[in-house]
Amino acid sequence: MRLSKLDTPFYAVIGDPIEQSMSPAIHNACLQQLGLEPRYKAIRVPEEELDKQVEWLVESGCKGFNVTIPHKLRIMDLLDDIDPYAKAIGAVNTVEIQGNRLKGYNTDGPGFYRGLSDFHQGNFDDATVLVLGAGGAARAIVKTLIMKGVSNVSIANRTVSKAQDLLEESGSEALSISAAEQRLAEYDIIINTTPIGMYPKEGSVPIDLSFVSSKSTLVDIIYNPLLTEFLRIGLERGCAVQNGVPMFVHQAALAFEQWTGKEPDIELMKEIIHEKLGGKPTC
Ligand code: ATR
Image (cartoon, rainbow, N blue to C red):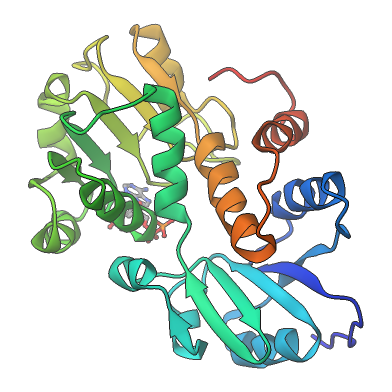
């Protein structure tokens, strides 16, 4: 892809696919609200074009960009500096450009934590937590929870060895999905980090919820649809549920703060997402 040089400073999100991204809508609305120029663009960058496009971003006056699938790991090779927390997580989703220097951050884990803290209105350090999935998102979430003092974190994954690998560095117990199904009632908070139930394949669940306790909180990091089948069944069983909107807006807000030094309007971000996904917030 050939991109022309831009004179005005701008922000971006790079990934592939990128057409579905809601980041431009929420960032631009907040930039505008704060009297800044709404210039946040989604740029499709296939895997093989990452180096070239990052070079272009630097030359073109980009001040910072978000990084999404499939570049969160590979981008680290192209940076001059990586924040220690992002280094510990092993993935970068936010890059700040100062002059020609690129510094990487990870706002996914802290974004998730902020969302969960708001929901619990305070301390959940003693909660027993089950994380479903052991990919990049699970990694950011598990590491953040443990760094913040939530020590009882177990992971259930289709490939148990991946859950085990993640736990070697942190956490309590690696389980198969079927073992976790039998023991669901033990967990205060159950978090889905897999893509199961995400648009356009709504309707499936990452785990059978027959044994879930009504005292548990179910959290899905998926925000499209706003109410996944996992959360719908949870509601039916009397659980408290939280969808992926809080994590998404808080990771965006943390990147925004890093780049502009200003706090964006989280509620405005949420409204835009709910508007785009058709409907009132259900959770
Ligand atoms: P992300 O970076 O978004 O976390 P990822 O690294 O590809 O994405 O991880 C996806 C997670 O969802 C993995 O834990 C994956 O399980 P495996 O480790 O066994 O691959 C899980 N996952 C994806 N599709 C799945 C499916 N159809 N059934 C069960 N687990 C699935």
